[in-house]
Length: 194
Image (cartoon, rainbow, N blue to C red):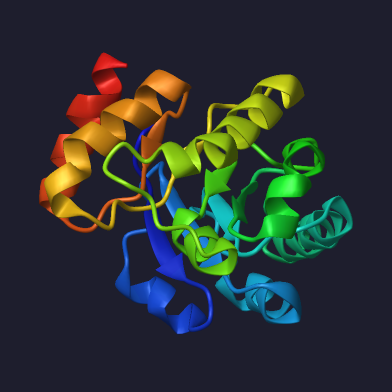
């Protein structure tokens, strides 16, 4: 799967305004306790999965899996149906990528490069070489855990969208986050060829 529909979990009522019933409907959860508290009111039978923002450890993902199981059970859903995609967007998350990839319910990792650029004070050049080691860590962790290839967050430079996406595809990524219908189409083309 190369594209996802994300809904912010801080405001679970927003879910009613978005077509989550699509097979790729995902809910974006805030980090920590706020994310755990958002699970139950946001749970719906047509929710495919959740993105766990700023994931840094397997125990926090195990707590999320427990919250999901409780919410699924309360909604009469099969326990274990809602999947998890941790967002690796901190230095601690990158160093724990292998652990995150093996956590309960995790189906793929999402590399949050924007957060990492800020935290690590990276200023990538046109070839994005500075991001290679981060990207490689997430691809290797995913492969070692036997989960789906990772996806990356959006491209901050519209002029480099295709080149950046092609580099991600060559490295083993399966897609990236998109801002708008135009980017969805372009991303489908880039990653379908990869």
